[in-house]
Length: 111
Image (cartoon, rainbow, N blue to C red; front, side):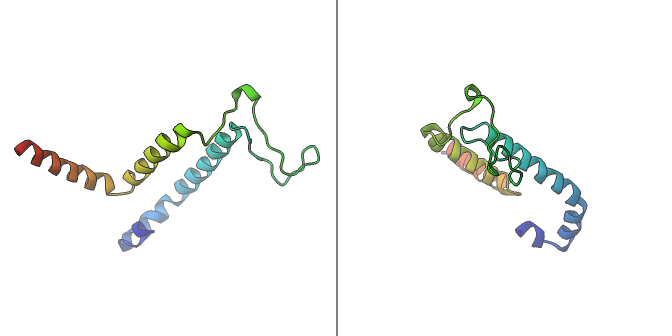
């Protein structure tokens, strides 16, 4: 949202990207559902349609291909790593961090 109100030209840029944004969001939703389907819980891809008398029928691969989520390694390593990556991918943040780290390293080298 901040990007959209930073300049009037941003609204024009957003209008130019609207088709691609829709494709990106749809692709992200499909990939997310496929990832959920690989877990033990599965994913109700066809949610409103009744399958075998259930409307919340989880479609999932064979048991040997499924995995559990929420284990210690995921909570201790992956969640913080991907959270930092998400912040660094915000527009302008990576350059700001790189500039700050470069200043700290230059100061340490001089001393």
